[in-house]
Amino acid sequence: MPPTFRNFKMVGYVVYGRGSLNQLDSILAPQRKQGAPMIFLVDHFFQGHALCNRIPLRDNDELIFADVTYEPKTTQVDALAQQLKEKYGTVSGIIGIGGGSTLDLAKAVSLMMNNPGSSADYQGWDLVKLPGVYKVGIPTLSGTGAEVSRTTVLTGPTRKLGMNSDFTPFDQIVLDPELTKNAPVNQRFYTGMDCYIHCIESLEGTYLNEFSKSYGEKALELCRQVFVHSNEWTDACDDQLMMASYAGGMSIAYSQVGVAHAVSYGLSYLLGTKHGIGNCIVMNHLEEYYPDGVNEFKHMVEKNNIEIPQGICKGLNDADFNKMIDVSLGMKPLWENALGTDWEKIMTRDKLRALYEKL
Ligand code: NAD
Ligand code: ZN
Image (cartoon, rainbow, N blue to C red; front, side):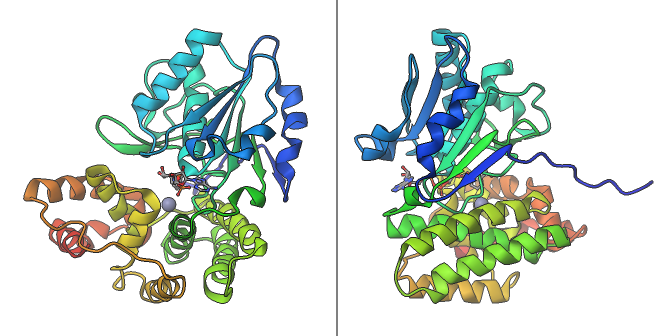
């Protein structure tokens, strides 16, 4: 049989630059449909913030603050889509402005405006059958790559898994590094490390090809510029980290993440540990798999004065560990990328349990 190569869908349009948010009104104009509003889903951090005055609200447009205290849930997506359908029938578009959680919510709500049932029905690969409404992503934190990816990670009734599909990527993204200015130091680090860890997992993975490598190496270089070589945070750091996130996301498009993500998903499912910090907690203990990456990671933690929580699995019982192990081992493509086709022989339940006990 001839080999098949991944034929992936990318983001439709990209605008990059400081102040590019000011173009949003003109970008949206041709997408507006008579009577159907644009819905701006904005990270709740920006409630009462000057950013809200720059949102180009017209006619019956609506600004909704997204509560991202917890990472997005299928129930939250379904409720938002239902509310919009009842109120407006349909909308001209969903514009997500915020961190990875808000971007994922915006993607998922867009899809659920046009697909029947619950978003939980579509957690998996290529289950979404119909395009969503027009959607725009505007990141205010850099690192997740959610702005370019073909997934939206949701916690559902039985699993934490994305709606991976060709309909998931944004139609438009606005990359304006000014929007990440003044993000809290710890949050910026955790989300930035998501990108660094994506790069290590992709570059050290068995799925690697030149496409993935080219983007991964560039993203890694930019992360180093920001977290290793820079002695203070400058505008250039915001510019560089935003492009690192984009390139890191592009690298993953043609490869996969690996051990840190697979283990971190278990933490997140059981303990609600957030993605960025969860990856850092795990990465801290992965010398066996990524010796150079972990070494450099620890250096960046120290240099940037960041505290990585320890002992978060203390006091858990057998059932808890088993749940995390089940969730983690369910991420088959991640393990295969990290350890090869024989991964099940390498990452046994006992071995994974021992790793969780260290965290
Ligand atoms: P986040 O979106 O969860 O936000 C973290 C915190 O930072 C929140 O309290 C938020 O209100 C706040 N915040 C956002 N922007 C800010 C700013 N400019 N200044 C101050 N505070 C700000 O964080 P994240 O790390 O960007 O995203 C993590 C989420 O992304 C997880 O839900 C994860 O599952 C998802 N994710 C998705 C993909 C994908 O491909 N779809 C990839 C990786 C991660
Ligand atoms: Zn990640």
